[in-house]
Length: 333
Ligand code: DAH
Image (cartoon, rainbow, N blue to C red; front, side):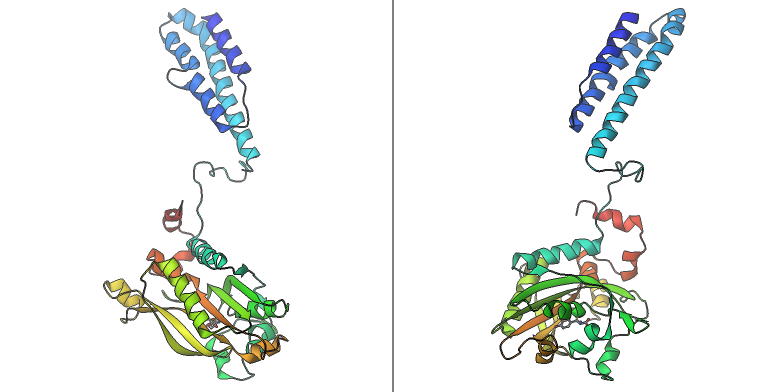
């Protein structure tokens, strides 16, 4: 027995590990599985007379500890090489996290526009009046400013929409420009199942020579077919935004077949997902762009609402309570 234990110990110590996690698994199988060397020694141990059990018990337990420690050490070595920090996230290896539904939807939307040749931009969340309102053609004391209840921070504010990023990008003066700008926005609104004091938007902008409303419609139409599926019905409704002229809102057909859909669409079957329009010449002028040479379109969509629609989440607040019963459903999406 003693020879067998010593031989097994030698085998454990001379086992060669490389960076591959499969070798750790092979080690585990060779020594610790039911038919592994250590387990077989324990099997024979059970048949020994009590005097011998006393003699070999401690040796065998030491061997098992050595084997288990070898597995653990090599496993965590592999994890560290892959950048996992075992101490900080002790449950990570058993409970892989998932992307948040908002992030998943943002990435899906972004990938469609990136495939169309749009670039990606983002900017700060604390804005000044110029970028959030004035340069976007919101006149002083114009009632349109009340469309967006604002959280002020002294003279600055939390941005009420991602349209402020349009101004920052246009001012860089690099044309033609085709970008999407996702981000979080804030409004001082009553919180309910349908609205929150912060939410997420994805802004789009295309500036070039001779851009048409048909380009805008076709781009958005393509997006909807890619995101929601071929044959999804859409409609454009005339609307008003100070920074676009003409302006429109786009609705998609969500249906009225279920109670939930009726509630979501206020009984119409149509759900508004974005605002859009041709960029107002005043916006281009405020960014030092000659509006006689350049024009373009812009759009801004609500990511939260699209996520609710796609994943049938009926209360916007459910997405921000960190409830793992909701979040864990997105593992692997
Ligand atoms: N910024 C608008 C809002 O938050 C949405 C919007 C409408 C963005 C029209 C646009 C646009 O770029 O062209 O309500």
